[in-house]
Image 1 (cartoon, rainbow, N blue to C red):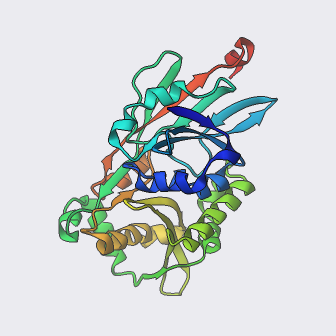
Image 2 (image 1 turned 180 degrees about the vertical axis):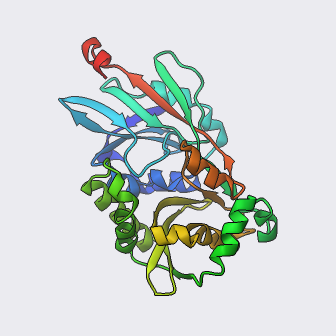
Length: 304
């Protein structure tokens, strides 16, 4: 039986065990992660936490709605058994009527068929399965990437693991962050909290590249689950781009993780240029759905 469970009634031990053992585990769905990115979340639960569906909960003008939080790419249905994933439509239909507007990203392994009143569209996400030797994986690299890596290897770049989250965020804000207006201070604070908690839980790592002058020029934060490594956040600089530091960082990690069977998740992208960069590593598109349900009163529905 699928039941609706309020946030304060969720058994987080059983919840996290379900996510950890799920056939489509993603770190965004762990209770600690949800607690950081949204002030409140409810849930749909099958039986004794055999399958779960998080419902981030927000309220505006006394209207309850659910949307995918910042720093989360995919949520949706997570299950210990593949068979339960076939019940995605039952979970969607079980979302309480109190949620007047729902816009959620589902995960790659829970695909929804057409349902009346539900709008769907697909987003791109590129992944690379690290199930081969580094030689075999690097043979899939594009010619341009190979040239950039050859250049990077002559630039005396130094790689440092377990660097500080604040240093990586500072690097981003000094470069690309200057041109992005939709990142609020709360978003940056949440990101830094995610990094610190993940590092404390041994499921996150900051890796930075430094130049010959011992200056940070590029960095990335990786978020780990039992089967998946997510490239959650990156920072670069003008110097880093000139030195091909980001390809150097990702390639080094691929070298170290070859033959692991893990999935390296680039976390995007619908952006053509980013997609081209990710595909240059041999990554393949693993799309996921976005669903939208609009139950607002007619005058608000038209406005929304």
